[in-house]
Image (cartoon, rainbow, N blue to C red; front, side, top):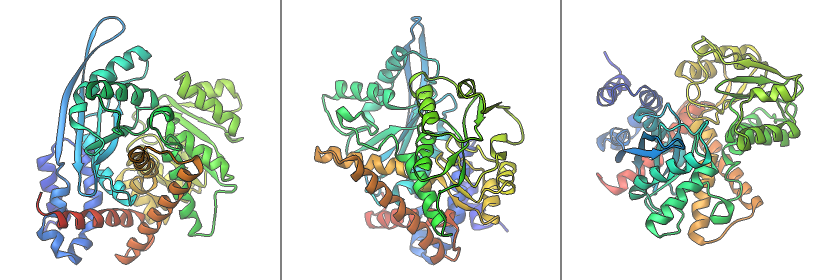
Length: 453
């Protein structure tokens, strides 16, 4: 006889065929929520879960633009507005060749629970395009961003939907899109977050996801009376999240051993200190180079080329205490998870969205690893985006210390909510159940209050 989860997932898969990442995200949440639905029949009666998995709105559009050679290019853009139960839609834009509707829906669905956990009044959305900024000139990126915003602007607004950045969308892209939005609407408002400091941005916003990821790991370590001091840390990725996670680890006395990109990864057994990290930031943020150049600059570091299609990623075989996956979805499979555990890793805090496959998550849970899933551990980014929205509404800016203090407070409260909720529902120490249930309860109660809409 099919379980309640299987029956529910059968309906989701039938309605959303070929969207494997979306199925994966929904399955994880559904498995956590069955005890909640048993305890609260009112949620079942109101079909809360069935309603949550259906986005309130899906927008898909073409993005035609002209490259430096005068050739017309055509990309496909998306914005999925998932849930406005607790506030305006909020979530990033991803520019990457892998972007499709299923990827955007998985990210938007995760965002519902993540945003709920922050305690801020923000709903959930996600968007993006199959455009690849890599290798493009600033002029081409500008033309693309202007074309993208020429359609997106109709669907967003400071009190409607407030996008931010994600993979492939940094300060440059946000700037070009904001300029086009302002031109089209004749309004200067907090419609995007991750803006430049001179025109409405918030201090700590670039650092927020990486800092928050490490603050969450620090809270997990405290449950075992430990800290980052002297801990060996493996970091994947080399973008915004990875860079600032590494920076915060160094501040807290830890040792960072690795960075990666789509071409491969480096291992520096001596540790990546502040000077080496500054080199990585310049390499990636200014020169937009490849991580291989780190090994050219620091020959004692080893560089390993990526092997697409291999059974495991050798990055996760590097001996460490703490793993900070900060690259992309499903970058850690079961074999990688077993390698981490075998080599002494006992704390995993996810900076990327859903970087561990379901089998990898099971390995972490069965091995009693401190496992902070993305929707809890990487919520710092959207939390400071929410704080940026508050500052825009007030026409006021907080100091760096104030924002960082608020971020730490939010990450502590997310950690506490996960721990308390997991215990209340009979799975103490299980951050997966804790995060999913705590995020769901706030949304579910808000939806009950607002009727069937």
